[in-house]
Image (cartoon, rainbow, N blue to C red; front, side, top):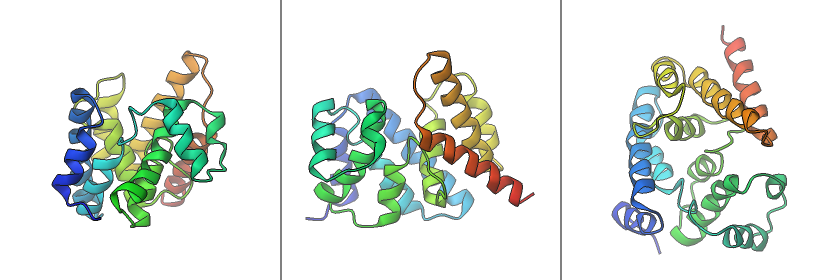
Length: 192
């Protein structure tokens, strides 16, 4: 069964606290604006943003069950459980909501960690998640300012913020984020 936009909104919003739904709405609005600014498809940006946190409030057991039952073989299970919701979100978007567009599914899948070779839509959804209007953390205004002229510079600043936060808390850093950050730096160097 295919879901229309309103049905998706109802299904997703029912799975999270109101505060997280407000965040999701902020990501939706920001992703559409960034898509319009940078020449991506606003409908795809909106769709990925609606679904990006669909599994955010699922239990760890349910997240792991979805990953294992779908044959997930990646290293993600060895890292912090808060990362799991992105991969599960992509699985659920396809399995439960009939989303088949690989670009939308990947934007959901990589919205927390990024990846080497991020697509324009990947960058937009990941960045929208960092800088939506409800976000308030040290450096977020700098990320918003950078986003006015460079997705890559803004994402690097976002990743730097996350990495610094994890370092101060002596937490493990998911290597995919470091690789994504390095790849963005290489992209900027190649274009300068």
